[in-house]
Image 1 (cartoon, rainbow, N blue to C red):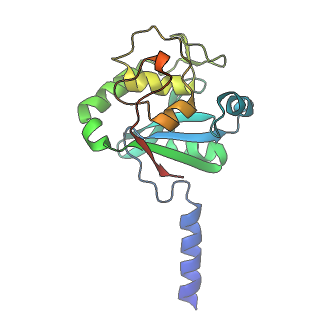
Image 2 (image 1 turned 120 degrees about the horizontal axis):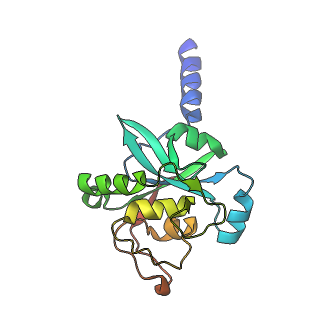
Image 3 (image 1 turned 135 degrees about the horizontal axis):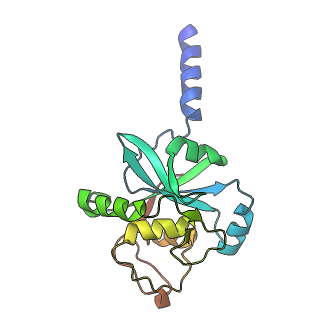
Length: 187
């Protein structure tokens, strides 16, 4: 009897862990519904159930989310998850992440992202170098070397979530799309 109660308590505690079942990897893209005052407006404008996103980086084996808040910074993954509505989050990972997210590619992604650390959050979603919003941050950090600086498209979390456009060569904005290649690994 005592053993049965212990198992129930253990399973309950494991089920309450913010990232139960998810093993973070460098380069994962995470999405959640923010509890910020502008979350609903972002969801309505983008037609996405999610209003915030970031890139997972491991530092000394601990997962962090590189995100555009005030200011752009690294946030411990568990803290980031808890800030989302009902601690629900979705993870996208390239199907061929092992082949495409090499040590060198991840180094370049981090270097591109580190240039943005400390920048102010962009509540107006402008495509500029002065302030950064969340999906723009993911776009910059994942395509830093390929970015030309001439973009007229606003990058939406839904675009990245649906098409996996955060990695590899991107289709031109006129095509209305981005490359496929991401899959959901946790919901």
